[in-house]
Picture 1 (cartoon, rainbow, N blue to C red):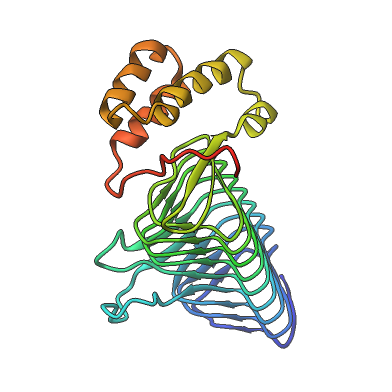
Picture 2 (tube, rainbow, N blue to C red):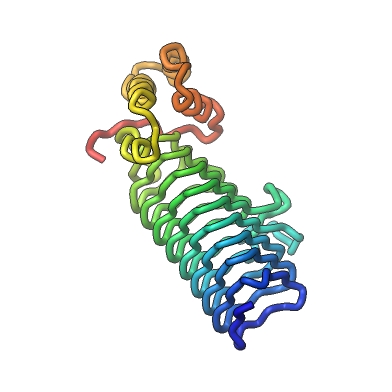
Length: 266
């Protein structure tokens, strides 16, 4: 192992022989780190934290810290992180609570930019981008390929759908439907269209994008329709498109309500 002589590593931590640890990093008992992961200077990894292979953890990051939840009484909850994630400087990732899922989960190939925060009991999928200063409240769920701009704040228990994009300095208080571009303050969040560029770049067919755009018009532009009516109509017309099916199911499963207001100015 390439461990700097100033690093402090508890004998109860388990590190693969290929792990690199920078100056003044601290790794506590209960931490497990997989092959090829690099821990930057002054990073602090604590608690029951499992980190996979090929991750990069930046300077002064705090991974596995106790949740900022007044009900937490030092129970043995977890952080579990997958492979090939980029966790930049001053990022904080807190472990779960017994009242939640008991663990904070982060998948593979995500980019958490500087000063971003993942609170207790969050669940992040794969290839997600959270730009500088992005903040997730507790129990937030983000699906694969979603992107959050700089200084976005997400209310606890909110869900961010796959391939969605949230514009910078937005406040998310409701669920963000999959494939949508949204921006705005907590009380004025607006949908401006589908993320067709992101979908196209990732190999989604022109036919599926066309059907998704048709469903978008029904659900988000026909504000005269009740949401249930709009979802039923979208399924009647586009049930052969997996993207539309997922969009409709995501909305039907929403407990906080969704961002539905449309603005072509965003």
